[in-house]
Image 1 (cartoon, rainbow over the protein chains, first blue to last red):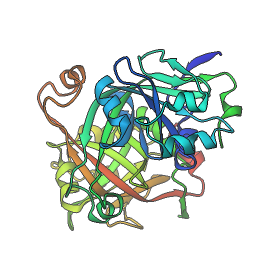
Image 2 (image 1 turned 180 degrees about the horizontal axis):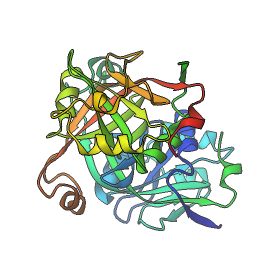
Image 3 (image 1 turned 120 degrees about the vertical axis):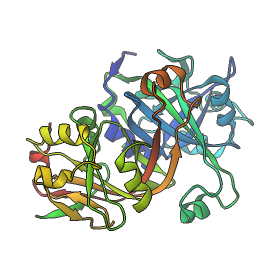
Length: 178
Length: 178
């Protein structure tokens, strides 16, 4: 594996395209714990506080929420071709009940700039450290969005992850899920 | 002017590239008031709550802050070639003191999907309605960022603008500032 550090903008269009299509993997692990991956279809990318940032939303009921609270880190991994079923699996099962990496036969690799692991089989990944977080609460959002997204009050925390590095394999462009 | 609605992803890379270079125009106007433009170098783009979003940070001391609070809308306008000095001007002067549109001889055009105006001379613009906002406060951010960005406690509000449309002129790609 030749994974090189690339510019924030090199995969920004692809990242947003895949995110609103099949989704991306959000990977985290608590202090010393086993890794876990969930599937995300939402995220905001760009510059904030003079640094590159990737903001993700995690419901407070989710297993991943506890892991990010513990570790303060996460990675975002872009799926390769043929990983559609893995995205479905990670989006429908909870890491409380099973080890998704083992079930799927994918490889957790310790991050280059963070302790959080990334998925070795993913051609591109972002490494992030939480620098700010916001708990979305009742009565703050546009009411039509609140009704549609939070009918049961299961609100998100938005984690602002400072991007410490974007890493891509040599042949990443050919291997990414379209 | 042939301004057509384009896909969120069509100019995402260019938007982030210009944003971290010369900057973008953030345009707003209070209820019935005159338009104003400030220059921004920070912003987050992508999908949140199943919708396209552009999040921008505005210090609560700024003239623009009051305008967005009043109107709940803004546009983000991508500068064309030769607009570097306008970006410098809008980034260093306050709309409290002068009418920047008049000073610069640029044209406010009422938005297509919002009341907020855009700059007619800009080849691409985003039209946004605030759906969520967060007041950044003391003691919430990573301490090193807080020290560097807020030495005088002049905190930002982060406005999450739901993107109602991205509009581009036919020849936008050739005219954008690089």
